[in-house]
Length: 194
Image (cartoon, rainbow, N blue to C red; front, top):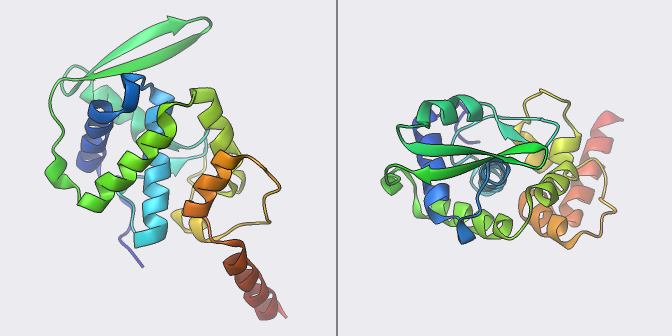
């Protein structure tokens, strides 16, 4: 069905630079960066059978994070990005400024469209709100702390969510199957187990 995921460092770096360069209101922090990447990658995988960045994501207590995220940010610091650490109340917040332009030629137009869509979605939300949204997703609930979140979970849902959160519904409509498709999958699965 799509390409194997293999933690493509170069495309991941360019995606970070693109997001830093284009994020609305320039209020990007590390949590928002990781949420944009996660949501764009998984929604793109659902539609096209491959992710944009070819990056694995891990179940983390604050929501999904890219497996290579910290290492890549460390590699990029002072070369591609200026990363500022700001102590805000009792936590550290990271802010970013590009030191070079992103190489947009590494992306197909529809890949950038997906990234743009999720930048817009995440732009006016707090990091806490975005963590709450991803914590409610079955993709997250089906894995444990430190585990990789399989891309194939975009095609699976344990049960209908009883969450009336419009933002979650908006994301899940793009990432997860419709209720009608889920009913068909459950019926097929139960018939196969008989």
